[in-house]
Length: 478
Image (cartoon, one colour):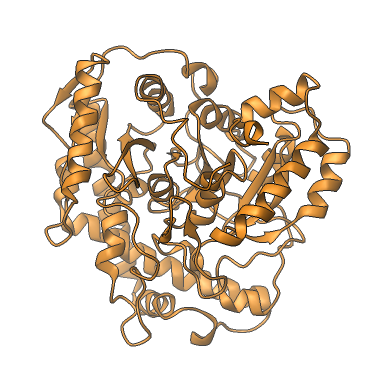
């Protein structure tokens, strides 16, 4: 069982193809692990075990991941007939279930994945920690007193605990990369339009989807299985020259890599241990791997007015989404249906006029162009922290009914260096390259130009070989 728990998704698929393991055996073993491990972490909030067993015993598509288990984040990927609560108390109380399949669910099924349940997420994915009132906190397998990050905290905790090798995740402001950093995993945020967000979401928003996992070959191979557009997709990222998985074994040419080892907000400090970790990886990239490290980072990251445009778009999106939720359950959403921070954001969004909303969109466009100039003219990649500190204690990031944003400074320590790349739509990845003195993971982020996941996969694979992390697992991992 320990061998299976430490085998990645590509490896499990190979075992099934070779006849060394059946899909039914694998799903039974996975369910056993979830039932043993999840009471400590609270990652899987909607188990679908009997459905998974029936699927595994049936006629599965002959895709690249035939028979491999998958957990779905309970946020954007709807599954027809399954609970779809998005961490929202009002949807949970209404017992709401999805009436359609998201496009990514269709791609997972075509690939042969077996969906075994849905994972915990903060309300509407709005926080950098997964502690929703609706389902309770998800705990970090490295230290159960600490959070697993957000908003894909349930997914990351499930993988870090050893329940399965990869789990669906999404990223609207850092929500793949932040939990990956806190839980010691690989977390790639693809470029906008790389994976279809339809039919309920649009690709010109800030959120994208992929997985959290352990290995670069899983990261790349699952991307190959899902990164195919559907008719009607609003934005489609440029196709790679060849499958992403082939870049895992293809070292890049010498690259120019800029380094950011500081905070870009005066009132949000960076942990000196995190800053030192970034510098140590920069030294490794230059001294061991032969890349050129340059003392440069995008100037636009220091423009606080442009950065603030993300908040206005965020508030407008929350207000709109609550209107949609009301349509789903047949009545208007009220303050009693959501957490105080969510309601405050919705009120801010409702108060925004059309001109203010348009200005926010224009500022975001300006920011996107200014950022792209740096990648076009100065460097190939940016090296930066994923988060400016390690995982917080459970409850440390929570506001109160009287002051919903009381601890927003804690949340900003995690999202400040991730959210800008959602505004720009660029690809970025968090890698588990360093551990703190206390034993907690420190995620290191690499950011490429729009559409250059191939470059990220090449460099991340180099680092996987020269600074291996696969054997560094959480204490509770089998």
